[in-house]
Length: 120
Image 1: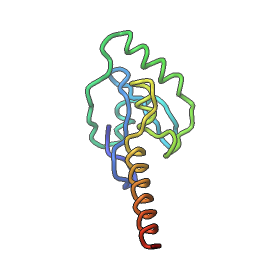
Image 2 (image 1 turned 180 degrees about the vertical axis):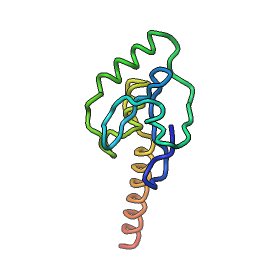
Image 3 (image 1 turned 180 degrees about the horizontal axis):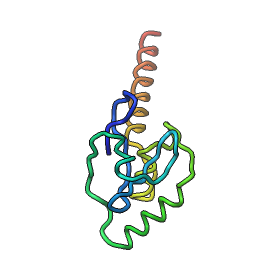
């Protein structure tokens, strides 16, 4: 992972699929493979422990990466976190989206409670 570009806060996620190959999902390229240098975009990169425990795990992750290559990037429905999670674990998931949704539902609930209490 590396800091997001363009002044956005947060992290850009990818999955290492070899010594110099990073699979990630970008607005301009969709899910695709880049070199570590291209992925870093001149920024520091942090490598988290890999989900690869064997050659079979690596082949499964590579197969998943190939299956989603060419899919369109969508900041909300299929972002870099979704693509990285799908390749690593087989399920697209975005913790950032989950936090935003949880916060939105909390605010909506508070608004409805305040409206209900104010209406009495």
